[in-house]
Amino acid sequence: MMTLEKRREALTSGQAEAPIIQVEGVYKQYARVEYRPSLRHEALSLLRRAFRKQVLSEPFYALQNVSFSVRRGESVAIVGRNGSGKTTLLKLLSGIMRPTQGRVRVRGRFASLIGLQAGFLPELSGRKNIYLNAAFHGVMPRQIKPYVESIIEFAEIRPFIDTPVKHYSSGMSARLGFSIAIHVLPEIIFLDEVLAVGDAAFQQKCVEHMLKLRDEGRTILFVSHDAGAVRMLCQRALWLHKGHLRMDGDTDVVLEEYEYFVQHQRDEA
Image 1 (tube, rainbow, N blue to C red):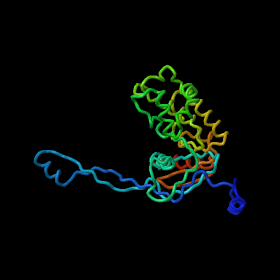
Image 2: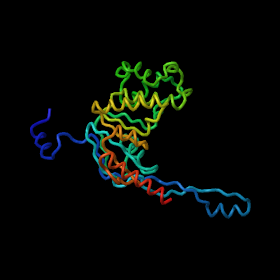
Image 3: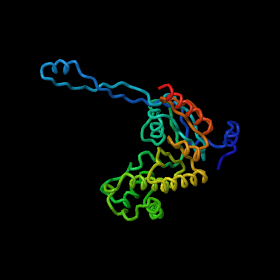
Image 4: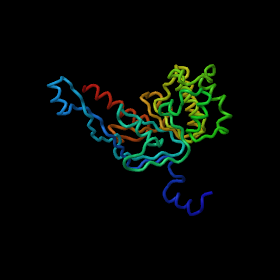
């Protein structure tokens, strides 16, 4: 229970609850790998026509001074062109990697749908991988057991559930990964272009389930190039451009600016 002092602090700050996600001044640096012919090998090539390459590393920032917060129950889209830093941001939020500088804070259990086959062991059956993947999300076998049949049913892979995952198609693995993630009772869901899994009917089922989770008050961060899905699922959007947070606001307003920018760039090309 919140004490009177804490209630007073919350009222003074104008908020009853701290953000469930907080990103403050985040930078993420990578080493860009480039290939250059070495002078030594260039000289040797004159004698033996051999041409080899050495690796040079040049640092670059995938994210630069990104700050935002997300309230519990918000659905937020992350949009931007390829290479803008969208997936890097989700990986930071998921704890897959750490920022070079700045702070990322996530409060609550989350399901991260970034690469739906992550956490699967190919030699194990789909059924055994359900328990393994659930454990990856912090859910114990006794907790996930009541949901196993529902997971199998949603993924539409019952005839193959006891077959090793190495024999699954990419679509089957993706459907199973999605189904597990939405059944581990997350408070926060990170989605990276995952509503494109399976055929049109399965995609529609995924969208409907995400809308249900949103209406239940789950917090959703959704990376997608599908403007229709973004508008349907998210009330707010973040626009990343070359690692910078260019705009943060109402989904329709942000998408209008982003789509105008993309079209303008195409016209200039």
